[in-house]
Amino acid sequence: MGPSPLEGPAVKLNLRGRTALKSLSFRERVAAEGSRVRVYKFATTLIALLICFSVTASDNSFVLVIVGAEGTKEYGEQFREWTGRWEKAAAAAGAEFSAIGLAEPGDKSDRDLLQEQLAKIAPASPEPLWLVLIGHGTYDGKTARFGLRGPDFTPADLAGWLKPFERPLAIIDCTSSSGPFVNDLSGPNRVVLTAARSGSEFNYARFGDYISSAITDPKADLDKDDQTSLLEAFLLASSGVREFYAGEGRLATEHALIDDNGDKLGTPADWFQGLRATKTAKEGATLDGLRASQLVLVKSAREAQLPAALRSRRDQLELDLASLRDQKSKLSEDDYFSRLEPILIELSKLYESADTLP
Image (cartoon, rainbow, N blue to C red; front, side, top):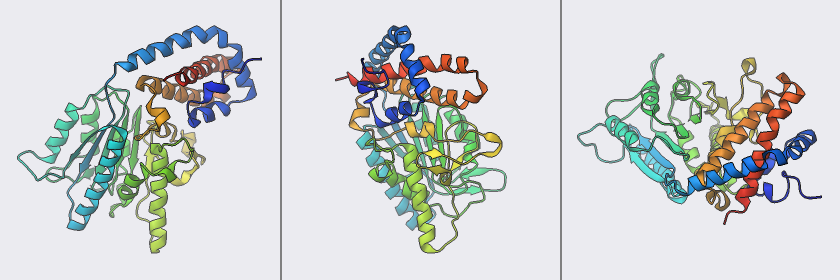
């Protein structure tokens, strides 16, 4: 008897793929096997088209770091060090890189330079735009602001500038009082990280130090797939922040949040066990983490060889699978498996086709 579509070369794409498929029940595996013939031609054709499309795509990931007013020389030195880590990570990833706020002030304000830079970046791409905010934030009880040299900007300002973007967005706000940014920036195909859970956490935030190191730190690789996802970096950075305050015998004045499902709520790091959020949210709200686990800046050799559109399709199928499993209790068994089968088969064939790439 030949191998199941959920076994053998089909699941050698990466550990995340294996984990996603191995978590399925025996009944789900049988359902997938039974429908393999029905969807084989469809899935193979779709994957071939994705590969052909990807070969001509020249878009890269883009890392844009915005450095705010330093306040003191000591802070300025730290901000430059963190920015340098992001620049090195972008180089290792083969991503485009730009930083605003480090050059000597000119005729244009940093706010204007930021708007101009965002307007130059391709708004549509399968590869993410990584937007990193380093500096100080403020909150007056109503509105949060990111402190630039010159005019500041609010979460609503940034949301407006990002509105044209259809590509994945990773927005990492490393400042104090950054919690309100989640509400304005949360949305589909976006991952938003904030150093603070609310505007009232106004003390200097150290999250930016830890996340700039964690994004390329092998110790963050919890699933052992030879790369660090944004979720893994968030968890390691948050752990570093907790250890800092505990080691200093001080009350923690920052609690980072991650939002990647568009519900504007955010999930703290201490709600996770491994890569899964395990606590129950208020009123049954969906917890965050899955989309962030799919975003990787410095990809493994295996992941880097996959065409961007193929990775994008795989990620969407994994999101569809997770969404369907969340709805399982509300569906009849027949309805559930009729929706499950095509997702599993396309995923299986995608892994199998990817395994044959040179």
